[in-house]
Amino acid sequence: TTGATLAQLAPPTKGAWVSAGFLPGDRVAVATGVAGSLTLRLFDRAGKHLREIALGAGRSAWLGAPWSADLLPFSTYVRATGKGATGSRSELRTVDLASGRVRVLGKGLTPAAGSSVRSTGDDRIAAGAPASRLFRAADGALVRVDEAGRQTPVLPLRH
Image (cartoon, rainbow, N blue to C red; front, side, top):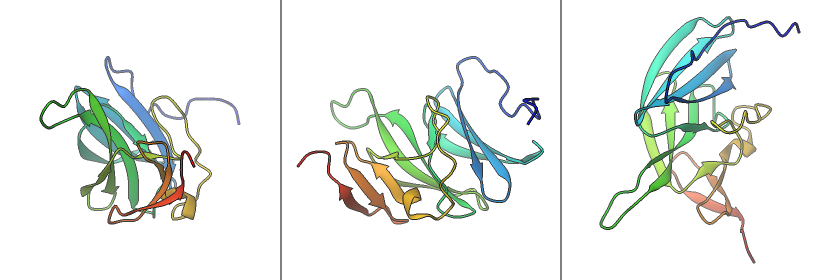
């Protein structure tokens, strides 16, 4: 490796929150949050733009390990809603990279692996591997999440 820049996938943007990760099929996903809205851009290995997908409201995206070649879980922080609600909460979603469909699976969940705006993450988890289904619940417990959003406790935070 030479350390040379091959492509700039996320140009500097004031107020933007950016995270990125590698995907199956020699692709790269770049999630950008600007002014409370999230966008996912897909690139090939040479940096050629393939597709852009609107991910909905959110400040930033924490990309999880892919569940398959075209199903990517991610968490974002959205404004809390409801009577007396303040601040923000995490929300687990999936995006189908082929169709662009985004689904909300649950609240209070963040990927146990993947990349966020604060961490480059760990791209060594293969798409579909059991570890790609692991998430941290709001109480800190480790849970397994299926495609319907059902949570199965794996490790509790406390005994």
